[in-house]
Image 1: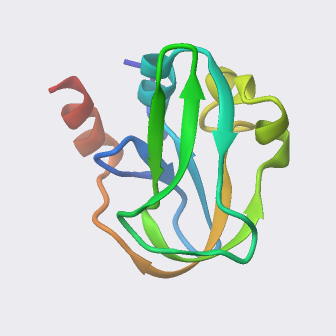
Image 2: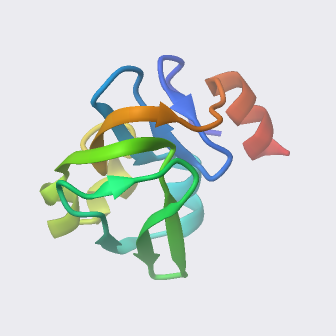
Length: 123
């Protein structure tokens, strides 16, 4: 399994996020590898309100279409337009340049540490 940054939090649905607000949200390397070549991202618009645990977008790859879940509740303050324009960046750098959106956080859903997520992903 690809090394998981220890300073991030993770969800059972394979999203990661940074601590604090706004929180940066993306998908894990585990998800990116499982999806294969990502060809399209549907993300919420800036200003849209999202709720923790709900579907907020879709990630389409050459293999499948997967739902993107929000790990937090709050308002979207930024969307990674570079990743929308070239979704392959998510495959190449899921924890860096491939981030998806930033959310001004009002509430946080259930989160895992890198160690807990690694055990979940391996299980």
